[in-house]
Image (cartoon, rainbow, N blue to C red):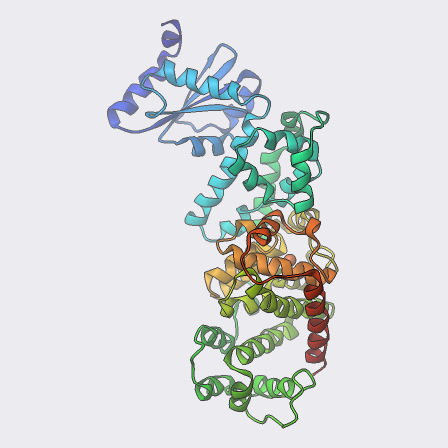
Length: 476
Ligand SMILES: [Fe+2]
Ligand SMILES: [Fe+2]
């Protein structure tokens, strides 16, 4: 009874909510975080100090929203009506949840709220999903503290453990399961010192500024109309050769380059191919569409990119070809997107280079540290930047999503597509599939796949062939 009296102010609020048939979250926060919590609360929220806790009532909020509001503070949350009917039961429920989770309650909440924030922002503001969906600096911090991370994940449910591990390279994710080391910092201290919220705010600010800056550069965001038509063609595999040829032939430069490539050593035909229609009959729709798209995109690059972007372009062509080869092994049979995603996967790097932004070393697969460094510079990594440009080009949403997730394929809507391009990227850099550096979700996907057998020998053979074929194309 005594508690009920002390919590009387909140009880009155609860009665109002119950009368209005609304909802209310009761958040219990340890006293030592009270000042921080008071800074984040909304003006309409009711707050009181009780014993060693700060108790806050938030109207119209569910647990995830409440968690998001006090992101970096340890807390217990109970929600009216489903956790109880009166203020005392809600308070005890919330306190119990705070204690139940031991040393790292809010880390779990943090993951939950990252998930929730991503989902919310995806719906609300299309631009913010490029800014808020990832936080590589946080991931690289966790990756550099494997013992602490092992302690966090040890308390999690299996599905949550998977969810966290899918942000990490496979080698590290695997080591967490065997980590029994009890040393290392207290997780709460570590993250508090690191200042999650402040760093996230700074990242988002920078990201917004970067996108604002790029929004005004018109030439990046106008995909030549011919490319748009080519992308539309790609989804229509039964299109007559003559109709497709008419569309490509509208662009004479594109046509002459296309004919040069099909007549090169790359294809090795003995007879001269003298028209686009002839090329389509011999090579097939898909091959010609991919070729035409590569040439069209390269034409944009010539006007905007510095010389060393050429190296990146070569890498992009290699990944596009390897993705096309790898797709069927991973059960990915829809061909129209895979080449484009491979071709554009690092387009964000080219955009960054052009505007003098930092990009990670392009000679190796990007690590979490690499992506974190890009993010520190511009608020985004090249994956989000590339996805943003692709969206401005009105490319299909499946392509935009795969570009954004090519380093975190487990977070993609189409896992098979993102995993294919992620693996093709690693192969393009190393000549084989280096499991330790491959993302954990991709390794899991690979181990569960039902496609034809895939050996390291086949991979290195495909790699060698792709390298020499792409070199021939580039020489034209
Ligand atoms: Fe990349
Ligand atoms: Fe790449």
